[in-house]
Amino acid sequence: MSVDFSLIVPTIGRKREVERLLESITLMDYDKDSLEVIIVDQNRENLLGEIINKYASSLNILHLRVNFRGAAKARNYGLKFAKGKYIHFPDDDSFYERDTLGKVKFLLDSSNYDAVAIKVLDPVTKRNALLKFYDKEAKVNCLNFFKVTIEFNVFWRRNVLNILNGFDENLGVGTYFSSEESGDLILRALRCGYSIFYTPNIVIYHLDKRNADNEKIYKYALGFGALLRKHLKGWNLCILPYAISYVGKSFLGVILYFTFDKRKFLKYKSRLLGALRGYVESKGIY
Image 1: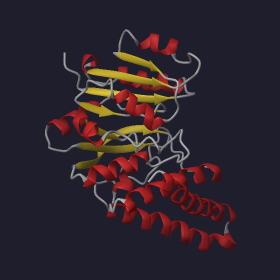
Image 2 (image 1 turned 30 degrees about the vertical axis):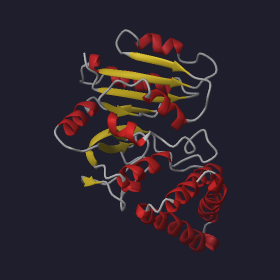
Image 3 (image 1 turned 135 degrees about the vertical axis):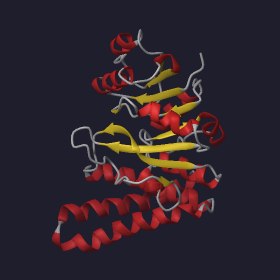
Image 4 (image 1 turned 60 degrees about the vertical axis):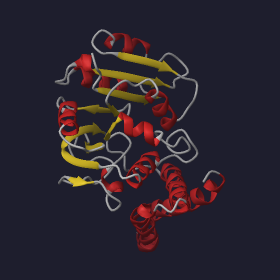
């Protein structure tokens, strides 16, 4: 039987969350024989063995234990084993609605879109998580990709990912440049002319973690700096709206909150310093 979806899950250090994700897959209104779950397990110990055994009878699970670290590298590794027509990379702490895959499949089957991005909601508040997602459908472009796409909310046609060579393994969680592997992939896809569609009518859940500490904000900003260097060097000017938004907001935040709000001032200062350092230190890569 052909495989509709390959769900590739990079994971490390999470057990309960992975179980919740697998449970949400079993509860979906979708033929489980048409799915495969590829878990790229970066744990040194066998943290997930019991959980995977629990769901092995109801889901087609490929458990790949690896000895490297890095979310982008793990996604690319899982992609090598994928058989599905469509590929999704759920975070190990995200989970699906019952109708998520059915709606995505209908949209991709009935259109020429190369990828579909969906809305991310916090499971507790039912409000936008991580980004300020639009409430209306939109074609993803240079002006909005950074507002509606993130690593785990985009479903791809497998052949498109293969042509793009997957994620840049220099970026993202587990690397020095701790973010922007998704932004890079989207930018490369747009430059190649691929069509990406965003819809708020399909949902995946993830806790809203936007209130990060300054150290994490700084590390994520390193990724933005590297992303900026990579795409400016390649004359991919599609990054300019994102760069203006990111740097502009950070600079204004430093100016506005310098006197009135030390916490917010330090947040935006961390973003600016991290972005600058990421841009400079990625010179040897890009």
